[in-house]
Length: 107
Image (cartoon, rainbow, N blue to C red):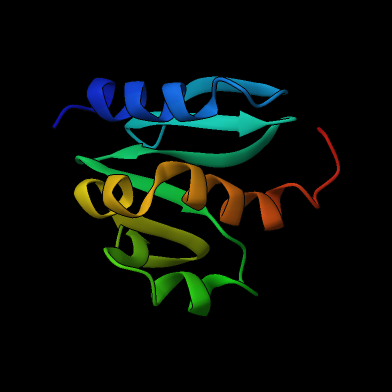
């Protein structure tokens, strides 16, 4: 799947949220909420910023894996297989991600 297709799925899921912007980042598309990175795309999968406190819980969900970028683990960021994320519900993933990102001050 292309970044654009994965991005379209996220765009549709985020259409009713306020404060959403997007920009190209990490070789994919990144969606920001009030200026803070919320989620994005990469290699046919989704990236969600869950924060370090919720990371272990997020990794128990279907299709989730730690985000490893340039050989270094990125704490608080996870990859989720596209099919698994769509099956379990993108809205559910976005709401889970908002638990952390929604607590951050706007940039």
